[in-house]
Length: 507
Image (cartoon, rainbow, N blue to C red; front, top):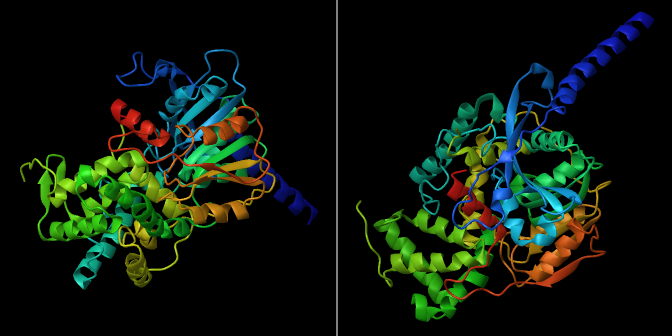
């Protein structure tokens, strides 16, 4: 019996050693940093030539690193021009599935951060210039109008979701099963080790709040300062996060966008009250269902109009373009009619892999049908849409995420606007209550998604006092929002800027 116990102990030690060896070897890598570009493209902020790019390798499966299969993670860094960095800040623009290598550039306009911190941009596993997953360019989301609840259309909607799951999982292959938050945060900590840092700080937006909370949960002793901006409800499942989408977008639509368009009726001619503008939207949508309209930029169906409005109300600088499009489609503004190394859908594939792999989805087609009717009746702009419906048909791997509680984690500053459409206030408040040692900075009379890094001085000062100076707020507090601009005005939202820069680079 004694010999058996010794033998079992030796097997356990050997197995542990086999797991540790590849991880230790991975941490000995060096990143060959090179300039991302010699000459910044036109319109890039001054100092963009300082951005450096590199890559490192990570195990494909951190739970079985000894199998020798690896992936590539692409990263960038922006170092201070004067002195030594006080801290290293990992950043993430959200998604999940957002590419992050251009994000450090938007902080060139925030010298207190960019001249005191080494800022790291990351394309997480699955997306960008990192090893990619894909859905084979198939996308069912928005392919048909979800307001049409006829049996034939429901078969298209939910059959499309089932096919979406098959496409994503088949085309992404083995890697797709390992694109999870748990695997991603282990990539992040490997990066920390490669950079030779005992501790790093975190600045994440939207889906980056989820990633940051889990990174701190898995590696509480290595995360120094944490800022989570525009928060997903990261203490619950993904399903609850996206269940609130209809509510969030409807509130932003009715409280901010529609009254703003009505205020400038002399510009858009869509109505003198928010309700008049909403009725124009409904009439225009109904006409598009009868006869789509093709403009120079493409063909508009009811779903296309919904997606334009949804995408435009994330940040206030999108209001003008959305109102102009609605005016052209409504026939109150001139419209020029037109004739009838990576996967381009890697971000979309990563999004589905994270959402469907991370946490279980409860319910099948009958649940989805009931849920769409209920939410659509309450929030018609986007309540009928079900981005996570694909997860009902997903062959989910055995992923058991640790529960984020905040226990043992550094002070966490959560920044949240009261009318954020994509990550509503209610979810952020719930995460705040359930995540110990967190402080909530509420931005009043504000609806933008992604707050830090643009022209809200109150928010910028509080965030940088923590990220740079290491002084977190002692208690929950609030800042005023930034007024809505006049037509054509801009606000310089950090997430919008990062996406625009990436598009210009072809990243």
